[in-house]
Length: 86
Image: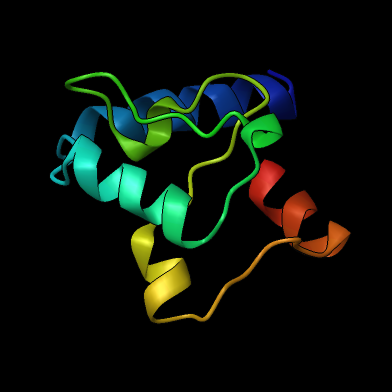
């Protein structure tokens, strides 16, 4: 089994145990607007029933707490994006 196979299996197992998203589309739209996400980022609100582990290929999951508690801002460093991508 390759590292990639193991990583994909782990993601699927984690997704099975996570609760569905609990915040609203309006809250998401407010986040995008308040933090001035450019349209080119193509920020997406998850479909009903999706979890944080369900980000499409090429996307990362960011949590509200990153911005509100952790003072996270874009543009992010390449190092941080590499960690999120992993």
